[in-house]
Structures are given as C-alpha cells and as structure tokens.
Image 1: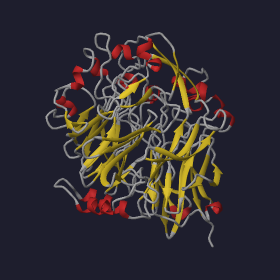
Image 2 (image 1 turned 90 degrees about the vertical axis):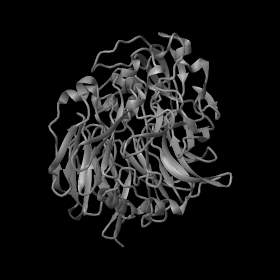
Image 3 (image 1 turned 90 degrees about the horizontal axis):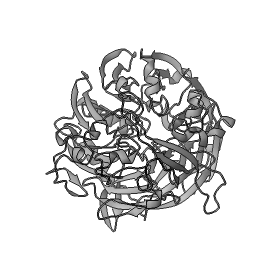
Image 4 (image 1 turned 180 degrees about the vertical axis):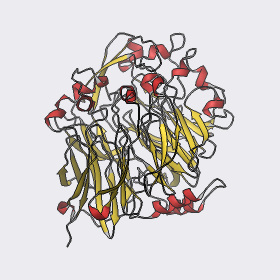
Length: 610
C-alpha cells in the first residue's frame, strides 16, 4: 500500500498559528510555499526534500549540463547544501572554518559577500568524524550558522554583517556543533555534537532577534532538565508514569556524561506545533560501563525520538529506538512527517529510515508504532521489534554486552555507521515512497574499559568494518545502494547497488526523477518509478552533500556541494592510514582514494537553452 498525502495538511499548517508565531515564521512559511525556492536544508518543515518543479524531467534530464562551478577553498567534508530564498543569491557554507558565501546567480556565482569566523583551531581534533557542517538556515532576512566552536551566529543576509552571536557549548569539554539550525516561530533551534567525548546532549532555542536563550532540553538527567512531565509526556501512547528515568536508568553519575547528542535534523509540524528530532549514542560505546549491577539498563534518553513544543521545549512524547545501545546506533536520522492511509484510516505519520537497519512508521501525535520492518536484509543485531513494548528483540550472538568486555563480537550488521547515516532521505507525494542512500557495511566490535577525562575521547570500543554479505545477486563487494521504500507496507520497492556507501542527501522532483550523489563524486538522476539511471556527471570530489533544486528567472537548476569527507571519507579528509582509525572507517573505505580526492566545489546544473 502506498501513501496518500493529505492535501489539507499544508493548508492547515499555513492557517494554524499560535500566540508565539511571529513575522519571521510567517515569512519563512511563505518561502516554503513557493515551489521555485529551496529555503531550508530539508526543503520544507516536514523534511520531504521534494520539489514540485518539473522543467527538468525524465525526458530531458540526459541533456543536463554544468552551468558554473564555485570552489569553496576548503578541503574537508562538505555536507548540507545551498539555500535559495528568491533574492537572486545562493547561500553556501563550508566545513571548518565555517565560511559562508552569498553567490550572485546573475553572474555565475560572483561572491557578493563572504563571512569567515575566527575560531580556535583546537576544536578540530575534538570533532569526531571530520569537521563537517550541515548547512545554514534562513528567516526574516537573517542567515543562521552553527559554528564548530559552539557559536551560534545570525548574519544579515544582505551584507553578511554579524547581527548577534552566542555560545552554545564548550569545545574544551568535547562539545562541538555540526548540525543545521531550524527556525520555528521566533526561535532558532540548535543541537550539539560530542557523544564520543562524554558530553551531555542538549537541544536549545534562541530568540532570532536577540540571541537570548529561550529554553534548553537535555537528553538525559532529571525530568526538570529534560523538560519531561512523567504524568503527561507519552511513551508508546501512554504517560511515562515513572519520574527521572533519565537518571535512574544509568549507573551512578553516568548520565552526566551520557552523550545523547542531537546533531542530526529537526523537522516541524505547523498544525500540531511540534518539533521532532533524535538523540545520539549514550556516552561510552562500552555497554558494560552503562549497565546497573551487571544487568542491561535502558540509559534513557539516548537514541530517542523527541516531540517537543517549540515555544517552551516541553516534551509531548518520547520513543527510545534502542534501549541500552551496544552498537553506536545513533538515533539522529531525520524524522519525515507524512500523512498516511493505514487500514483505510488517515494517520499523521512519522517515517524514519534508521541507522539500525529498520524502517519505522510512527504516529507523530502520540509516538505509537505503526510499522517497523527491516530495509537492510543483512541486519542481524535484532530479529524484529516487539510492537507491544516497542523494544527490539536482540540476537545474543551479536550482542557485545552478552559476549563480554575485551571480546571481539564479529559480523554484526549493520555497522556503527548505520544502514543509513544522517544523509537525509526524500519523500515523493507522487509515489508515496521514501528514497534514500544506504550503507551496506557490517562490523566487528570489541568493547574495552575506558576512563572519562573531559575533552578526551570516551569511546571504549575498537571497530573493524567490512562490506555486507551479497544477497539476491547484488554487486560483489558493494558497500552501498540507493533505494525506494514503502513506509506503510514496510518493504523495499526497488534498489540499485553502488560501489561505496551512499552518503549524500536524496532529492525527488515532480519531473519523475530522484537525484543523489556518490562517494566517487558522481551526481546521478534515476527514474523515480524503477531506479533506472538516466544521467550522471562526475564532480571534482566525492559527494556527501545534498542535492537541491530551485528555479530562478524561469529556469530550473540543480545544485550540489562536492567535497569528500565525513565519517566515510575521514581517511582522505584527515590523512589517516591505520585501518582501525576513524572508528574503523579508514580500513573499509581504503579504496576510495583510487576514485576521488579532496576538494570543496559547488556545481550548478541547467538544461541548455532551447
């Protein structure tokens, strides 16, 4: 069964406002309504990454050609993508040192203004998996940037002048910032990175006019600091009931270094007035150090979906995808908001193509599970999810905790990178399917005892990685794929193999196309119905950025940042050679240097004039 979009959703979202709604929210909502624009990193509040533009389509995409390119001057991993808000400019960012450029579309990317912050370079070694940044946000004439050194900056979109800046953390304690902010109402929502350094994760809202903190919700700790009310906050559709689970489900004091960093994506439902995001791994990767009296403990609220009120931060509901994580299955993947028909009834859905190898479909009003099925068939750490309890049924032979400290548990699928990392998926209302880049990699995992030292790695595990077993006639040695997923039926509709993990964000369009990039540097267009490749172009470096589209002066463009790096490309980005470095990524991606090299380039594509 495919999905059906509720046409009323968009209209309701535009008409439903709260007392806290300001002109900034109204103006951004108007931009998100305009099909010519790409005003947020995920394309809209719901995270669809879908464009209604069809000038470029399956019949003419083979003619797509580069219009111009722009070098960012930075040689690390380029995640995220450019924004277009209708003012004739593309707003483009870089990894550290977090430059921002306003590029003139009328003059093939002439630099109108640029911003480069002065940051402490000692933040670089504290960044877990490359010096990436997932993009800027725009609202009310301002560009919002999360800098690596935890500074949140508001820039004047007209000239790049700094309007305000505020510190959101301390890199000497292991906190950094890599996520893209999101503006909701009169607030900019930001998260923090650093789970591998034993930080205590938090999501924070700042006033977009002044930079004043409005609220902060921690990922673990007392309910008063997590902003949970156990009598009203729901878990699996019922009130939590028990107080301070963010403390009691940890060994003494371990919650204070419990990770749970929300470094991924935030989505928003204007009708329900709720934001949705996920938290990362629960501190040390050695599960034995997070057990209580030798028994598994849930370690709440690591790897958890939060639904919060954007005005106050109060938690409406929570769902922990992996209690007592033993595999580093960060829960930060995007929560895509889709209205779905299930058994003849329309439901307000939330879809996740998750790190765990499972595809989740949830009710975004209550947090109840609707469907949970494997999208990566090699997934073996759990056999299935118990739909009554919401908990995974773990396979003992692939449990590092069950095997013990200093024991190498082999052939766990997927790897800690996940069957899909943070690269955002796309939802097409035309087909009702989710399109996503997939990692087909497994791992050996050996936990060891580690001590906490502020600002130092707090990992406690050694990983090696290898390609997943080939099934059903797949490409030998392949480590990735691009797939179409039916979130209601919980099944893969089609899938195409790729040599390396697919680390770029997907894009779908009304032109019956799906776009994505590869680690070798190709940007590809495939038929949205069957995955048939219709066009490809080799960019100067591997792509871990997101493919975006927009229309300017009546012409549709496709744009993508290339620049290999991130966790998958950390060997190239940081010059690492030991196979176990990069938490195991260097070894499994050792062949990547045969296909691409470093380089930060924006490529803008167009159809030739008729």
